[in-house]
Image (cartoon, rainbow, N blue to C red; front, side, top):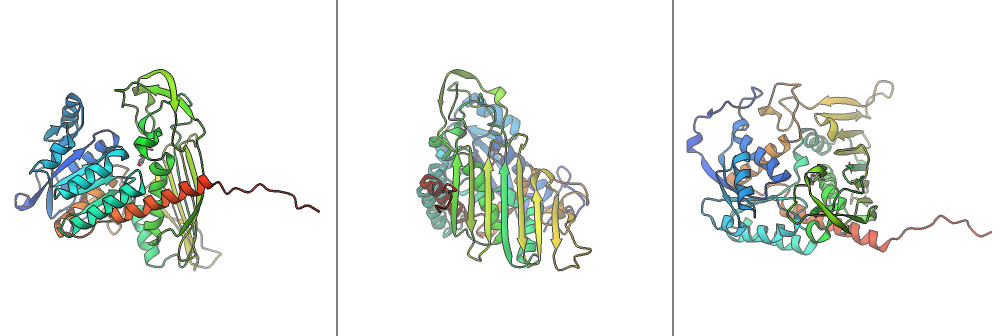
Length: 418
Ligand code: SOE
């Protein structure tokens, strides 16, 4: 159940019985862009949704003592740690939230699960399939002890996409034929943008593929309810050398904001893809296309989805995230066509606790919804989705894309010899 049924977020201090609820101490590792977004989710969730447990922002962790203490103050965490192992060892931490680059996900997640903690891990689950397999195995062992583990594919929690999932499952578009997804950003168009960790394979695992492609692979599997059966891919690195960053300058933000970083002399090699394009098959016979790029000038965070089925189509654009387009192909052709569903009704997913109809939500609310779903799983001991097994399945698709692209089975159009 949720608070307010459309009455809006609960006022400060509201919620009789709050004191009686079990507290879940959250410890978050990393506090940059994703850490700030997750903090927003943890801070807000209990003020909007009626939850079976209470989230406490117990500690945040980062290597730089002064910086992590400032982040704790800014983001609302009660204490700060400089070593993630110390965070994991704390008795007052029940749930470890991993918001670090991919190269530390596996080590932190496995240690936290083995120490009896619940885990939320940012996407992609890991940098390699082997790491993701170890994490999924640790999550399965932990599940037997009542612990939960979830991957941060937050776009599943956009109400319009959750509604699309519901409509597909209800058969509203019939037998699925086409699944079309793209995730376009443009923060690498400028060749002087520096070599941040996201452009290094050892830190990030892959480039646009793992960062953006992982989201749309997860969404495709979520929306269809099917696992991808096979892929064929092309990847490219358009700018292979970029200016180096000062060792301590991590401030260059993920999706832009290059101004904050300090560039130093010299250039280094980009070791990840700038763009990944691939096609895929689903077991049902549906065909899918995917495009993930950081080179789509003018596209800041354009995640688009279209599904075509025998009875209709659904379309979504993250830049208009309170809307879902629906075409009902069973209606007479003379009057049918795409219509816009404004996804702000109390009957829509997650909307029952928010603002009255028409008062839309945004990007940050996906993190509130993520926290809500995870806390419900913690309270009931149920497996939250996307689980580490779901994260592993995405990781396997990413690896298949890289393999296909590396084999480069591209045919040149030729004239038939007469
Ligand atoms: C950067 O490309 C980024 O922040 C991704 O890492 C996020 O997952 C995506 O939601 C927004 O863009």
